[in-house]
Image (cartoon, rainbow, N blue to C red; front, side, top):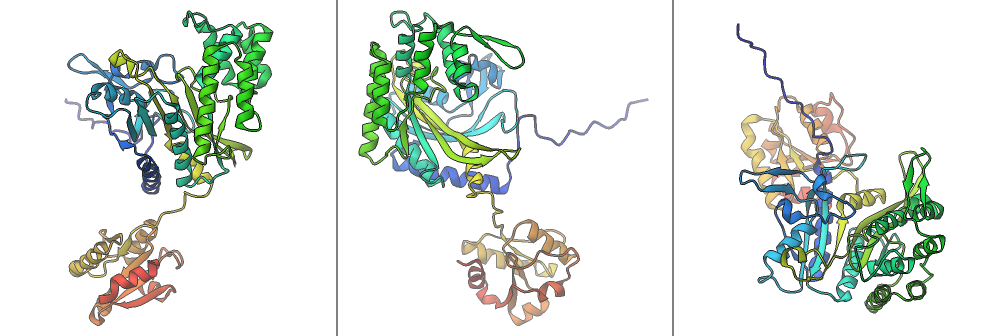
Length: 495
């Protein structure tokens, strides 16, 4: 006898590490991205959209802060035996575009890009495998004026989306300064860049943990190593105590103003040509920003910015929000970073074999949206469409005509398309849709050339058993001429 067991139904659930976005979330994100795009456009940057899929070869091994990024991408082999992958950021595709169209694009090429990226990494709280990035880059300019411009543009972008001045700071550092410190500390040989590479990696990771481990914990990692609370031992970089103090002095070098910080850095990298070059670049950036009115209340030189320094080749920057929020346990904490970037002069060279300078920034869209919600600037329930209720199925054309007039006037509106038999269900639907107004026209109102407009924002929530007559008797409703429908709706909406 044949097995007639029905096929197993698929589970209605999102894959692990992914999520769905609904109405208000999508609307808020689009509005934020549109505002940022307006800033980028004003600075002369052009939009660019690249394919979500790149060859694994084109993506390369340049994912910041990850030793082997190919292990962290969603990749597959196509029928031509080529390996393809979903893009893990928006910078690698830009490098490919800059090389592929180098004879057609202006130089420097200024572009911005916004869209989802995918990383095949272990998901966690607030960490998803698909997320949005918002990037702006200049390819083809070695001038630090390009870096200064990115920093100014980042500050403007934060303000235009609703982060007021005083609630953020753009911090600027330079990979060359770190290299100078490494040279002074004895873990960088300019004549042999590959020498001490392992030790430099330990140093980079150690100073990036200064906020979590504190000076003593970092000092241990710079030396012989550190044992954590569980007893696990992490081998250190093996620096002598005096050299470890040189590295620690870097993250403590920020002074009361940019001039003071630069003086401290000059002393710190004394004797290192690359270090002095990096300090000079920071000084130029500070002067260029000051000339445009971007003072230390918005942008500061901060040697404590170390994240991503293994990836960048020159100036680096990070936007940090300075206000506090309350975590899930009710404890106050700083919100932290929402954007980062810097100069990455070696990326396009992979394709062309020629040095092509580039600098850019990436804004974490989800982080920035979360910050705006924490500030109370987002997260309210967005108003839905005006809902035209259906009192008589035979008069659907009349109701559709009302909706057509409202839409033609630029007012978001819809006709209730469910079963109109139970009027209470229509009112529940309007409430669930966050509708600002319900329009009602029964036979009596139609005969008199009238419509009822119910203000759902001012009115009480609809009771489950509400009847039509109970609904009509509630406050916050008006009787208007049918011919004045659009004007009446606009008045109630405050337009």
